[in-house]
Image (tube, rainbow, N blue to C red; front, side, top):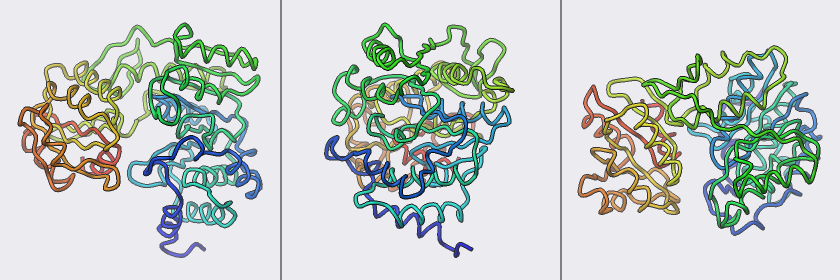
Length: 414
């Protein structure tokens, strides 16, 4: 039996490892696939026993949503399915899921303890939890596993796992200090996940600069490539997207493209029921509409590009709405650009700090001149949410955005 509190102890042990989700890597040399490969070997190679279907999902945006859609499709076809995503919102147990249920505390503690017992020197947080996930999936005898890439692709720990299908969602400028400062360079990092002869489904326009890089890579290693364009027939309704006779309970036109990519990647699965799987999938903190009066939209957008998509989603689904904003932002994010996107679309602005390592101070955020004096600094996220709710009133809307840590801190309170 695993002793009480073992899951907390496992997290404390993991927290002592270098975690590049919380600290900046000192360049690409921080990543080395030799470590996760060696770790898998020392664990008995669980990454080679994940099932008949193993899909790796890479991309700048949409990879978490596509991964969840794919896992739902596999599960809907009666296949025992593992899903590995990152980062987590509230608990690391969210990252390791089988058939829609997060790993239990005892199983998590056992997998982490076994992993850390043999981990080579220098193993990172992400490498360790990726290995623990593979160990759990192998022991649970999954028939399918969907793996979301953490960062980039070429040197991501999930890339040591052999795949039967690969997905690349979109390409944009991200983590340029690590992946390169052009879309072509970033596309090359994502395209490196494609394996010789393994089919790949891609949402990137093959005629674009990034798309040409992916096409060249697939052709070079003879990987069948299928391009999925964004659906044209999409209607935005207050509670979701209408795609023909299918209603997706999500906000944002980009989610229709994510659903189409997942459906294409799952084509040919026996017994797959796409409609039920896609229509029932919820994406936490992805422009997620929560209940209550006022309605609260919880969103983890933290780049200018993702915030722009959130602003457009609100305009499409709730035209004319000017929500009260709860806002936090990391110090490495483009504050001027993000304020410029939000300032004209929101009413009151309630700033706070949730990431004590890399988050900007609430006073700094509230003092930005782009808010035109409408922003207030709050001592914590709950105080900011309470003030935003009061400002919106029962019939209004509150938007929580700017930080995954903020979304994780407030989602349970909405």
